[in-house]
Length: 341
Ligand code: SF4
Image (cartoon, rainbow, N blue to C red; front, side):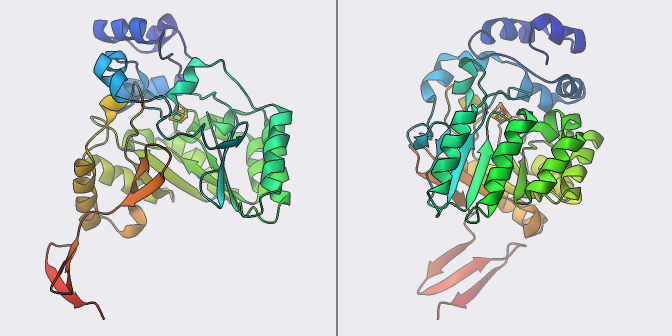
């Protein structure tokens, strides 16, 4: 892991502004990255912006416009590290460790805490909550990054969940295939995912530059062991908030059999707001993408309701009602009428 300015500069020459930002920001929001991702930042401006600290993070307006936990994840926590908001799904946080600290992270509040990995007792507490709540059919394991957990701990979680008949889906939210793809290629990890049977992997590609030969190989390995791979992208100002960039990203994901699943509107998190576009802009982009891509390559664009209201998918407005009739706009901008029988 690259953590200090001198380690970083050995791999990536910095401008005086970037150096100043590193020095002033990293004491508030630390810096950390895999070597692989820093090498990618040499070739990609977008990656550079996602990984290097910037002074905007500590700007007063950016700070005051956001909250540490706007989605109230901690309020909905039922037992330590487990959030139960939707009736049939729970979120299990297993660590706050990530191979890269992404500057736009919605859980930036955890960066200030000492690194933690869920203890065996906490795993048992979470499993016992899930066992006694048979309405839970989907467990999302997230972080931090669960693919950085000690393998025996991940094995315990996955194999215990496998035993529970009411848990039908186990999702692992991970950025490892993007930021440290070699880590995915460990045989013991892949074998565990295969044995766990219920695992779906949610990756987190934000920009086409991240779909490298190494990342493709990591995805191929996951698919080979039977885990469907879906992708979550965050809409980020100055990084991917253009039709061309997202079209390329979603097309290239589809080519490697990764289904674009969510395009998240940037959450109002303290130290992150400068990455936020307007919702209007997000919908404009989506409307254009609907004309260019097949639905299989278009993710849900969603806002996550501040205050813990959950996710709401948004669609660009392509119909209106007039005199009891529905008017719809087709992919090429022509309007047609359908009666509401
Ligand atoms: S990998 Fe996810 S949880 Fe970790 S820093 Fe990046 S966005 Fe945040």
